[in-house]
Image (cartoon, rainbow, N blue to C red; front, side, top):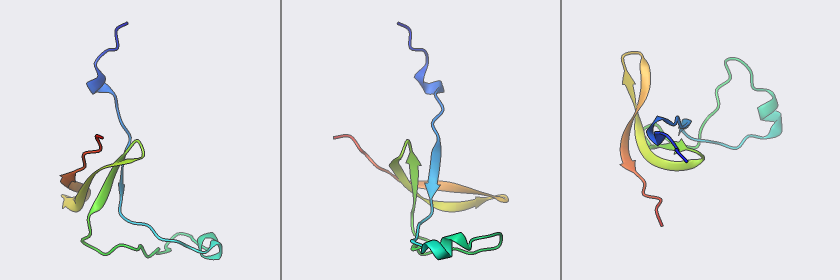
Length: 79
């Protein structure tokens, strides 16, 4: 059976800036212009997540007018 070139497989990647807990009442009142305070501080590392697993840590950078991530640590999940 020929599998093909696995390097061409696309993997969804997310960057997690932080999180918080909200009461249902607070969540239901969210609308355009709402600001949600995160439980992380500016300058803290962000998590790079692929397939639900944290794969790396990085820092947010601005490239022209876009945001990007500078990878600072690649996590080794091999056991």
